[in-house]
Image 1 (cartoon, rainbow, N blue to C red):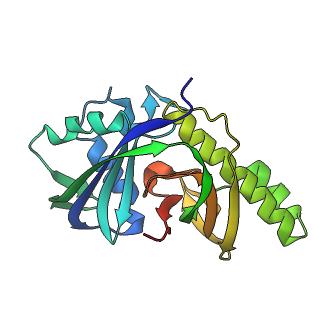
Image 2: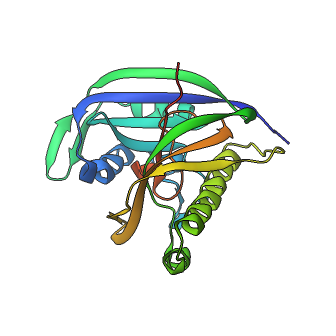
Length: 226
Protein backbone atom coordinates (compact mmCIF):
# COMPACT_ATOMS: atom_id res chain seq x y z
CA UNK A 1 0.00 0.00 0.00
CA UNK A 2 1.42 3.38 -1.05
CA UNK A 3 1.42 5.99 1.72
CA UNK A 4 3.24 8.48 -0.48
CA UNK A 5 3.77 8.76 -4.20
CA UNK A 6 5.61 10.96 -6.66
CA UNK A 7 2.97 11.75 -9.25
CA UNK A 8 3.45 13.05 -12.78
CA UNK A 9 1.76 16.32 -13.75
CA UNK A 10 1.37 18.01 -17.10
CA UNK A 11 -0.03 21.53 -17.54
CA UNK A 12 -0.93 22.35 -21.15
CA UNK A 13 -1.76 26.01 -21.71
CA UNK A 14 -3.24 27.21 -25.00
CA UNK A 15 -3.03 30.71 -26.49
CA UNK A 16 -6.78 30.69 -27.08
CA UNK A 17 -9.06 32.65 -24.79
CA UNK A 18 -11.85 30.72 -23.11
CA UNK A 19 -14.93 31.84 -21.21
CA UNK A 20 -15.95 29.97 -18.07
CA UNK A 21 -19.21 29.02 -19.74
CA UNK A 22 -17.27 27.42 -22.63
CA UNK A 23 -15.15 24.99 -20.58
CA UNK A 24 -17.68 22.20 -21.12
CA UNK A 25 -17.67 22.81 -24.89
CA UNK A 26 -13.85 22.82 -24.87
CA UNK A 27 -13.89 19.46 -23.10
CA UNK A 28 -16.36 18.06 -25.62
CA UNK A 29 -14.28 19.33 -28.54
CA UNK A 30 -11.14 17.60 -27.23
CA UNK A 31 -13.06 14.36 -26.61
CA UNK A 32 -14.40 14.41 -30.18
CA UNK A 33 -10.83 14.26 -31.51
CA UNK A 34 -9.80 11.02 -29.77
CA UNK A 35 -11.04 7.40 -29.91
CA UNK A 36 -14.13 6.78 -27.75
CA UNK A 37 -12.45 3.93 -25.85
CA UNK A 38 -9.92 6.31 -24.23
CA UNK A 39 -11.90 6.61 -21.03
CA UNK A 40 -9.55 9.05 -19.25
CA UNK A 41 -10.63 11.84 -21.62
CA UNK A 42 -14.32 11.59 -20.69
CA UNK A 43 -14.38 9.41 -17.54
CA UNK A 44 -17.07 7.08 -18.88
CA UNK A 45 -17.09 3.36 -19.63
CA UNK A 46 -19.74 2.91 -22.27
CA UNK A 47 -22.83 4.72 -21.03
CA UNK A 48 -21.74 4.45 -17.39
CA UNK A 49 -19.71 6.92 -15.36
CA UNK A 50 -16.21 5.87 -14.36
CA UNK A 51 -16.36 6.51 -10.61
CA UNK A 52 -12.75 7.50 -10.17
CA UNK A 53 -10.86 10.75 -9.88
CA UNK A 54 -10.54 12.41 -13.34
CA UNK A 55 -6.94 12.26 -14.54
CA UNK A 56 -7.52 14.67 -17.46
CA UNK A 57 -9.12 17.97 -16.43
CA UNK A 58 -10.22 20.87 -18.61
CA UNK A 59 -9.69 24.36 -17.20
CA UNK A 60 -9.67 28.09 -17.79
CA UNK A 61 -6.33 29.42 -16.53
CA UNK A 62 -5.58 33.14 -16.71
CA UNK A 63 -8.44 33.54 -19.17
CA UNK A 64 -7.16 30.88 -21.55
CA UNK A 65 -7.91 27.24 -22.29
CA UNK A 66 -5.82 24.67 -20.42
CA UNK A 67 -5.65 20.94 -19.73
CA UNK A 68 -4.27 19.48 -16.50
CA UNK A 69 -3.10 15.86 -16.69
CA UNK A 70 -2.36 13.77 -13.60
CA UNK A 71 -0.62 10.40 -13.36
CA UNK A 72 -1.72 8.10 -16.16
CA UNK A 73 -3.42 11.06 -17.83
CA UNK A 74 0.01 12.52 -18.71
CA UNK A 75 0.55 9.58 -21.08
CA UNK A 76 -2.99 9.28 -22.42
CA UNK A 77 -3.09 12.94 -23.53
CA UNK A 78 -0.59 12.01 -26.24
CA UNK A 79 -3.48 10.53 -28.24
CA UNK A 80 -4.84 14.04 -28.75
CA UNK A 81 -1.51 15.51 -29.78
CA UNK A 82 -0.76 12.63 -32.15
CA UNK A 83 -3.49 13.83 -34.52
CA UNK A 84 -2.81 16.84 -36.69
CA UNK A 85 -6.17 18.62 -36.50
CA UNK A 86 -6.37 21.12 -33.62
CA UNK A 87 -9.44 22.89 -35.01
CA UNK A 88 -11.97 22.76 -32.18
CA UNK A 89 -15.63 23.70 -32.23
CA UNK A 90 -16.54 25.84 -29.22
CA UNK A 91 -20.25 26.52 -29.32
CA UNK A 92 -21.04 27.77 -32.82
CA UNK A 93 -17.51 28.83 -33.71
CA UNK A 94 -14.53 26.82 -34.95
CA UNK A 95 -11.09 27.86 -33.86
CA UNK A 96 -7.55 26.64 -34.42
CA UNK A 97 -6.07 25.94 -31.00
CA UNK A 98 -2.39 26.71 -30.48
CA UNK A 99 -0.32 25.43 -27.56
CA UNK A 100 1.37 28.25 -25.69
CA UNK A 101 3.27 26.18 -23.13
CA UNK A 102 3.62 22.67 -21.74
CA UNK A 103 4.98 22.23 -18.23
CA UNK A 104 5.89 18.80 -16.90
CA UNK A 105 6.45 18.23 -13.20
CA UNK A 106 6.56 15.60 -10.50
CA UNK A 107 4.94 16.03 -7.11
CA UNK A 108 5.41 14.09 -3.87
CA UNK A 109 1.94 13.54 -2.47
CA UNK A 110 1.91 12.76 1.24
CA UNK A 111 0.97 14.21 4.64
CA UNK A 112 3.70 16.23 6.38
CA UNK A 113 4.39 17.59 9.85
CA UNK A 114 3.80 21.10 8.58
CA UNK A 115 0.86 22.93 6.97
CA UNK A 116 0.44 24.28 3.46
CA UNK A 117 -1.93 27.08 2.50
CA UNK A 118 -4.11 27.02 -0.62
CA UNK A 119 -6.94 28.83 -2.32
CA UNK A 120 -9.87 26.77 -3.57
CA UNK A 121 -12.08 28.27 -6.28
CA UNK A 122 -15.59 27.29 -7.41
CA UNK A 123 -15.67 24.39 -4.95
CA UNK A 124 -18.88 22.31 -5.04
CA UNK A 125 -18.98 20.45 -1.72
CA UNK A 126 -22.74 20.01 -1.28
CA UNK A 127 -24.98 17.41 -2.89
CA UNK A 128 -28.75 17.33 -2.43
CA UNK A 129 -28.48 15.33 0.80
CA UNK A 130 -25.81 17.31 2.65
CA UNK A 131 -27.17 20.63 1.35
CA UNK A 132 -30.22 20.23 3.57
CA UNK A 133 -28.00 19.40 6.53
CA UNK A 134 -25.72 22.37 5.87
CA UNK A 135 -28.65 24.79 5.64
CA UNK A 136 -30.11 23.46 8.90
CA UNK A 137 -26.98 24.36 10.87
CA UNK A 138 -27.33 27.56 12.89
CA UNK A 139 -23.75 28.43 13.74
CA UNK A 140 -20.85 29.39 11.50
CA UNK A 141 -18.63 27.07 13.56
CA UNK A 142 -20.82 24.07 12.71
CA UNK A 143 -20.89 24.99 9.03
CA UNK A 144 -17.08 25.38 8.94
CA UNK A 145 -16.68 22.00 10.66
CA UNK A 146 -18.95 20.32 8.12
CA UNK A 147 -17.16 21.88 5.14
CA UNK A 148 -13.76 20.92 6.60
CA UNK A 149 -14.90 17.32 6.95
CA UNK A 150 -16.07 17.30 3.32
CA UNK A 151 -12.78 18.87 2.21
CA UNK A 152 -10.79 16.16 4.00
CA UNK A 153 -12.89 13.59 2.15
CA UNK A 154 -12.13 15.33 -1.16
CA UNK A 155 -8.37 15.23 -0.46
CA UNK A 156 -8.59 11.53 0.42
CA UNK A 157 -10.60 10.83 -2.77
CA UNK A 158 -7.94 12.59 -4.86
CA UNK A 159 -5.20 10.53 -3.22
CA UNK A 160 -7.12 7.29 -3.63
CA UNK A 161 -7.74 8.12 -7.29
CA UNK A 162 -4.01 8.10 -7.98
CA UNK A 163 -3.25 5.08 -5.81
CA UNK A 164 -2.21 6.64 -2.48
CA UNK A 165 -3.67 5.69 0.91
CA UNK A 166 -2.50 7.82 3.82
CA UNK A 167 -1.71 6.29 7.21
CA UNK A 168 -1.22 9.69 8.83
CA UNK A 169 -4.34 11.71 9.65
CA UNK A 170 -5.29 14.36 7.09
CA UNK A 171 -6.12 17.80 8.52
CA UNK A 172 -7.91 20.65 6.72
CA UNK A 173 -8.62 24.05 8.28
CA UNK A 174 -10.68 26.73 6.55
CA UNK A 175 -9.10 30.12 7.34
CA UNK A 176 -11.18 32.39 5.09
CA UNK A 177 -14.33 31.89 3.04
CA UNK A 178 -16.52 34.06 0.84
CA UNK A 179 -20.28 33.95 0.62
CA UNK A 180 -21.28 31.02 -1.60
CA UNK A 181 -22.75 31.81 -4.98
CA UNK A 182 -25.05 29.74 -7.21
CA UNK A 183 -23.49 28.09 -10.26
CA UNK A 184 -24.88 25.64 -12.76
CA UNK A 185 -23.26 22.20 -12.86
CA UNK A 186 -24.78 19.76 -15.38
CA UNK A 187 -27.87 21.93 -15.48
CA UNK A 188 -28.34 21.87 -11.69
CA UNK A 189 -27.93 25.00 -9.58
CA UNK A 190 -25.37 24.36 -6.83
CA UNK A 191 -23.59 26.40 -4.16
CA UNK A 192 -20.00 27.23 -5.14
CA UNK A 193 -17.49 28.35 -2.51
CA UNK A 194 -14.26 30.35 -2.81
CA UNK A 195 -12.04 29.88 0.22
CA UNK A 196 -8.56 29.63 1.68
CA UNK A 197 -7.52 26.60 3.70
CA UNK A 198 -4.54 24.94 5.31
CA UNK A 199 -3.76 21.24 5.18
CA UNK A 200 -0.88 18.94 6.08
CA UNK A 201 -0.99 17.36 2.60
CA UNK A 202 1.16 18.79 -0.21
CA UNK A 203 -1.18 19.34 -3.15
CA UNK A 204 -0.13 20.29 -6.69
CA UNK A 205 -1.38 23.51 -8.24
CA UNK A 206 -4.45 23.45 -10.50
CA UNK A 207 -5.75 20.00 -9.58
CA UNK A 208 -9.43 19.90 -8.65
CA UNK A 209 -11.21 18.81 -5.48
CA UNK A 210 -14.89 17.96 -5.07
CA UNK A 211 -17.51 17.80 -7.79
CA UNK A 212 -16.94 18.88 -11.38
CA UNK A 213 -13.14 18.84 -11.31
CA UNK A 214 -12.95 17.75 -14.96
CA UNK A 215 -14.68 21.05 -15.84
CA UNK A 216 -12.50 23.30 -13.70
CA UNK A 217 -14.54 23.36 -10.49
CA UNK A 218 -12.73 23.15 -7.14
CA UNK A 219 -9.35 24.31 -8.47
CA UNK A 220 -6.47 24.40 -5.98
CA UNK A 221 -3.67 26.98 -5.98
CA UNK A 222 -0.81 27.23 -3.48
CA UNK A 223 -0.51 30.36 -1.37
CA UNK A 224 2.74 29.31 0.33
CA UNK A 225 5.50 31.85 0.57
CA UNK A 226 8.53 31.02 -1.53
